[in-house]
Image 1: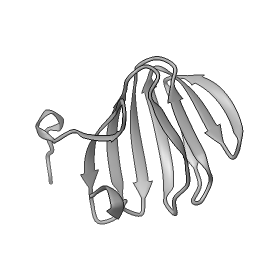
Image 2: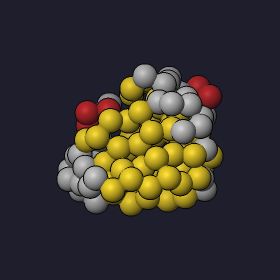
Image 3: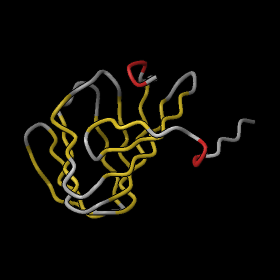
Length: 106
């Protein structure tokens, strides 16, 4: 069993105001993310399936051009190659799960 202390993991800024602690296994990447109020994950797509677990905060989530405002706890499933974006209306916490592994985030 592998035990990982989140406070001991390095924080990586993915975008301005988007701070992640990343865990990679052979099959998935898990990102514990804290977002500052007003921060933006710009529209993008990737080959990975992504499960966005919005734990705390209010977010505008855009999937294929349709925007919804949600307040955590909330879950969003993003299928591979779907264009998506997130804006933090308030500060918040998210856990992202990607499959397969996000090699670009290693």
